[in-house]
Image (cartoon, rainbow, N blue to C red; front, side):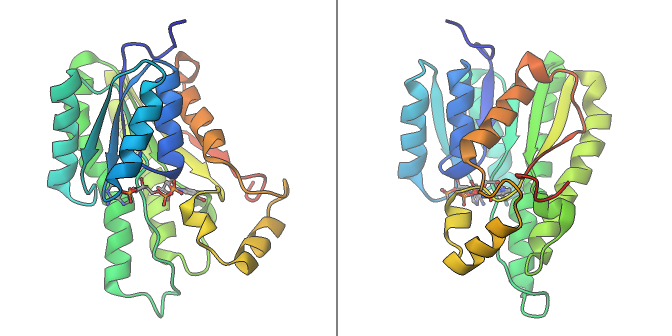
Amino acid sequence: MAGALQGQVAVVTGGSRGIGRACAIALANEGADVVINYTSNEDAAKATAAECEQAGVKTLVVQADVSKAEDSQALIKAAEDAFGKVDILINNAGINRDKTIQRMTVEDWDAVIETDLSSIFYLTNAALGGMRERNYGRIVNMSSVIGQMGNIGQANYSAAKAGMIAFTKTAAKELARFGITVNAVCPGFIETDMVTALSDEIKETLIKAIPLGRFGTAEEVADTVVFICKPTGAWYTGAQFSMNGGQYM
Ligand code: NAP
């Protein structure tokens, strides 16, 4: 049976692991051809591609450091060269370098701002020319509950994720007339490498603050991303999709 995204091309940054991996697979299951970006884990990116291909779609694996403008431009060009277009851009790649403001180095600050925030400008800027020509585009920015509520030890990350929400609103206003929607997804704590790396003590404390009493899964986030990209999401733009087990309302 043809999926709702048959014939569309999706680029997923940070598609090798975690939420990005789940998004790539979920988009493939709806019939989209998928470009899977990674920065260092080539084997994981290839494994994601193999899973996507089981849905009968085409894939392309592209190494690119999205914190760099040239790499981001090259990623979009590689996708357009291979598939002729980009319909869906999932700006998912992200890192954290958690420290209190006093201990945070300029390097910690810059790394997170460049990877999580500057990247979405580079990639949107590179992709929107083609989207405008075809009068169609779906851009989803992977923000975070931390961008909505702040968190001790995450000044760089919270600033980047809040910046993603503001960028989303501006881009949504600028691009609506070209048939391009731009939305932010704001997950709470999700069971991926980013969270499993925390100590058991911190994880216990975090779960106590979540009314639904558990972390979310990457697949739950991917379901929301797919909802936005399918015709079900056509009238959403500039929106924040909050999903956090009730941690922040
Ligand atoms: P993850 O498991 O740590 O995976 C991070 C992904 O981003 C990997 O695919 C990694 O590629 C890629 N990446 C990192 N730096 C990159 C760069 N400079 N260029 C290209 N790719 C890069 O993270 P996750 O938990 O799935 O998080 C994905 C996104 O969701 C992030 O933006 C994160 O801030 C956001 N988020 C996560 C949570 C959570 O609780 N996990 C909650 C809210 C929001 P490699 O495999 O090559 O390293």
